[in-house]
Structure formats: C-alpha cells, structure tokens
Image 1 (cartoon, rainbow, N blue to C red):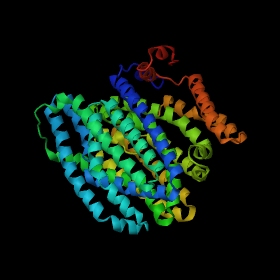
Image 2: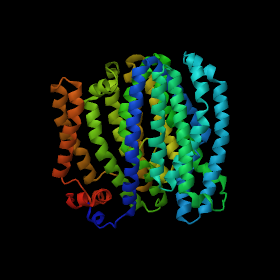
Image 3: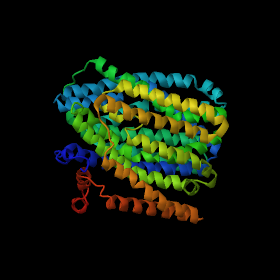
Length: 510
C-alpha cells in the first residue's frame, strides 16, 4: 500500500479473499435481483396507474414496518453469534441459536400479523385510502413468511455460503414474482395481481431456501442442540430490533409523509426516483453480508479490522462513485427511458439521493454494519434514531413546500448526518478511519469523470443516446484516471486475483 511502509509489510489477509469471493457471489445476485426489480417496476408503471402503484407501495411499506416488530431483531443475532460458536468449534450452540431464534420469531410474527389484519381498516382511514384495507388483509400473511425469510438469509451469512442466499433471494423470488405479476396484470387483475405476485414469490423463495439450507448445513442441523442463554441474544438483538424499527420506518417515512400530505400518484413517482437513487447500494449490499461476520470474528484485532474496513470502503467507493456520477448527470433520461416520461419529474430526487447514499455506504452503511460487527449495537440504535428523527422532521417541514423534493432532502440530510456520526464514533472508540492517500485517489478520480460526462448530457438531445453513451464515457475516464494516478494497492490485486490471476498479474500496483 502507498499509505505507510508498515502497511506494505502487512501479511496477506485471507479475509480479503473471502470478502472478494463471497462479495462477488452476492454482487452477481444483486445485479440479477436489481434487474428483475427494475423490470417489475417498469411492468407495474405501464400496466397500472401511478395511484394504484402508490397504494401498493404504501401497503407494502406498512407490512415491512410491522414485520420488524414481529422478529424482534433476533435474526441479526444469528450472523453475530453463530460465526463465533463455529470458530470456537461449538456447533451445538450455533444450532441452538438458529433454533431458538426461529421458534421465537414464528410466535411473535403470527401475533403481529393478526394485529395488523384486525387494524387494517383503521390504517386505511388514516391514509384516506379505503382499498388499503383489502391490501393489508391479503398481505398480512407475509409477516410470518418474512420472519422466516430473514432467518434463512442471516443463517446463510453466518456460514458464509452466500451462493445459496443468492439462489433464494436474487433468483427464485424475483423470477417467480415477475412471472406471476406479469401474468396477472396482463389478465387485468390490477392491484390484486401486484399483491399475488408479491406473496407467491416470497412463498416459493422460502420453500427453496429452506430446502437448500437443510441440504448444505445438514452436518450443523444434525448435531445435538445446545440451548444458549437468552440474555446475550436479547442484549445484542433488542437494540438492533429497535434500530430496525426506526431504520425501516426511516426507509418508508417518506412514503408515509407523502401519502399524508399529497396524493398516491406522488408516492408512486417518488418511489421510482428513490429506487433509482438507492440502486447505489448494490455494491455495499454485496459486501455487507460477509463483511459483518468477518469483522465480528476478529473484532479484538483492531489493526486487522481497520485493514478490512479500508479495503471494503475503497471497493465500495470505487465502484459506487462512477454509478453515482452517471445516475446524477442522466437522471431525467434514465427515468424517462426505464419508466415513462411522467416519472422524469423525480430527477432531483435521484440526484439528491445519489450523493447521500454514496457518502453513507462508503463510511459504514446505513445499517451500521461495521459498528454491528464490532458489537456496538446500542450505538447503532442511537444512530438510527438520529437517522429517523432528522428524516422525519425535515420531510414534514419541506414536503408541504417542495413536494417530493422535500422528502428527498429529508432522506439525504439524515444519511449525511449519520454517516458523519459513524466516522466520528468508530474513530473515537477504536481509532479506526479510512482517510488514506489511497482512498483519496479513489474519490479524486471522480472529478475528471464528471467533467467528461457533462457534455454528453448538455449536447445530446436523445434520451436513448444519453443512456447508452454516458456510462461508457464516465467509466472509461474514471478507470483511466485510476491507472494514471497509480491508485491500485496490493489488497486490490489480491481481490482481483480471486477472479482472474491474469488481470492481477497485469494490474499496475504501486
């Protein structure tokens, strides 16, 4: 590395190889999942009105919010405790954690689902959407399903077998959902078609995921179960449960505020813009599932944690930055081409969220995965309260004045604020930071890439041409700048070597 001589002498960290292997698997899955996600939204925006789509967004937002209460954050304990028990050669306790979490969330999620079904009429009245009552009644069955779905996901994270998570989450679920939704929309079922696609896709994914986990983790599932003390599980999980409540609410508070002040078609338009802007999380979401267990198993070795954090942050920033530049410069064109011209109204939403998500995912992620891996679950909870509070207050103040742009400003403000808090906290607690010369080169390469992209947007009038040429120009200039500034490190070579030894050999490493 170019930062210090001592970093040059750092021994090869196999965690970097694990991060590369498992991160690449989840990246492929996220790309496929994202492609189907965009395809599903494109399908919806063409076959239902913005008001129907907005109603569906509101209903699923309520479901996802209530689901967090249903699982008490316990699934998050699996990928924290299970790797530690497996590392200590105590598979019985690892199995015990999974079994105890599964049994608990099944009971709590069933109770929450019943409560939601009973109160669906009242929720419909609050949003002045009578049809929401039917939507919530039908979708309430997904609350226990989502609890088991999350247990399976974190179980895959804990044993670092993310290829099976990809099959369940990124292949089976979106493919089934897209097929069912498309067939029912073509048959004219409208809102019922959207709901049926959501429910059936989730059910099939859980069935396949449970079968795969049973097959792959058979040795773990057949050992004698050793129940573990509930107190450590709850002590770690409950703050994260409250974190998840606030975090999910933060992720959907924009829709709630917009639904309260504006019409459902505004919710639909904002949702499309938010989805495009939050697409920047694809790299973070690819590395985060394996990053947290890697930090948890070595959390006492601060130097190693810092090394892994810096590698992950550089890769997240290095791949996310050019995507952010492309989406920010060409927001209107991408919205018009991918969806319909009426959704280009959300172009400023995309620009604001691109900058906010880029900053936040680079310094630790919106869910505080670095702090979670270090065991600071209470701090994560406090940060998420700040995240929600800032988003809610700013959105409530600005949505009546600026409409959907006010909601975007609220989200962006919260993401920047919590990102700054994460940087300060991890440095104060453990002396860890990511601000090195190597990191500066990654960020600096975005300047010439942005300058090169501006003429494409200004001079070309065709949205299709902008969509096609802008990423080619921006990415080419960005990569060329990295090469010219000698930005690649030994860890980069190690990461790339997991994919292609030939590329590793020719990579210009300082």
